Image 1 (cartoon, helix red, strand yellow):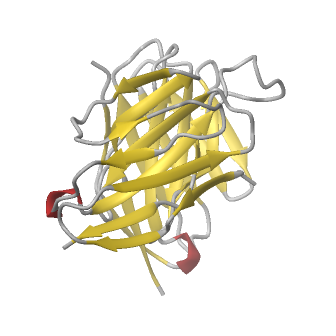
Image 2 (cartoon, rainbow over the protein chains, first blue to last red):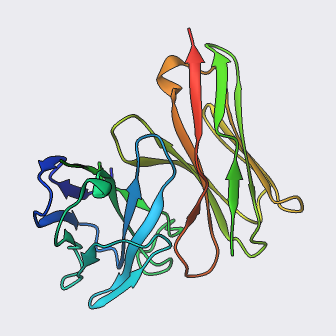
Length: 119
Length: 110
């Protein structure tokens, strides 16, 4: 069972508000990711991190920002939410093969998602 | 860049076998994965196959890999209504993030 948690699961907020989506994992994984997904649609990688103090932008341009100050924590922040930010945000983590031992293939473990609605 | 393609929809009758297909472009792929996503949830890893294998079986799931044609398939035997979900194919090559397909929506008709 994957130990990766996202809060809040659901958030409805007005335009212009600042929001932070939290993501934590207890597996000691070095890599973490944020994906944006409209319901039933494809995944878009928006940010990833390969370790503490390391963050990269993904394939889809996003107005959000991320930080990785601790291994287990990878929050995503929107400074000023807009209706176009309405979507589901999925957090994931993985271990570099060889670091976690066992049968680790570098597969991703996903959280349950945070569904954001901006009015 | 790398690309992973899947058909978007598949509809089968309960009890039949489902076959979901995927093609990828990166010949240096090391692992290929199948994930399942139920409504309103995150993705769950179903199974994976190493690139030097042709086939992997796990209970009702069979993965076939044709590395020459860069073709991956997932067969679900005796498909049940609980198998209705979106299935994503993904590949890993090197140290870059996994590349996901757009997902195949499987509908199981009772």
